[in-house]
Length: 92
Length: 206
Image 1 (cartoon, rainbow over the protein chains, first blue to last red):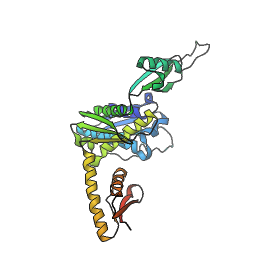
Image 2: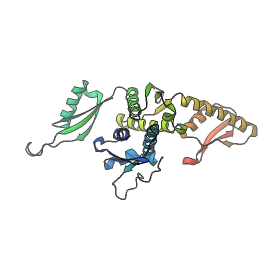
Image 3: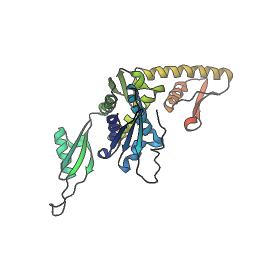
Image 4: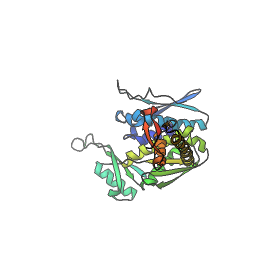
């Protein structure tokens, strides 16, 4: 799942070398956290979260095939900025 | 689409070297600068090489197809992608196993794939690329079903003389119905409302 998220995130941004995906395998849900260069955060979130939600839907479709559940989060260290990355609606 | 990273003493050198490795000519590639490099003091201390990423396009259809194929492979789906150029879009068709999952509930996965692939292609090619992705004839079946519904609603509107709202549809589905009913002499169509409340209205033509 990590490889899939990493591929999509890297292909969407201008600075792929700064993309990092951290995978935390939990009992029921696997958490995938995406970090990008500050300028690129918007590119993985998209207008009204369109891109972020698409990444989530695709990753969930792949996870469902293996009877797993994933949660994809986009981390932004932009203090005070509201990109909505954390606030996005979660698929389950 | 072939991508290559290359270092050099400056950007120009790195690009020239990459073009040679790819066996092409300068005009055919696009590149982005990863690091400008530093010439250092007296060209000795603190010298840092420049690094570029050079992309050689193999044609828009082929590039687009490769992006989708790569995503499907990484999703662990056994599937193959066919590509052709439509009037204003790249048309991709997925064939393989597990099509239900690739389509998703009400086509959500297909739509998500379209959004990601067209964003990636937009960034790579520098222009807006409209991408349509179908799997197992899903879109064609959906189009037929929508047209059947539109026909029923238009007949009802003509008989009652009263406008009627269609059930909620995605913008792409609304577009399809607008086009389908455009040539209908009995009714006219328009959309009303904003965002998630936007619906297509079928009204009598007068």
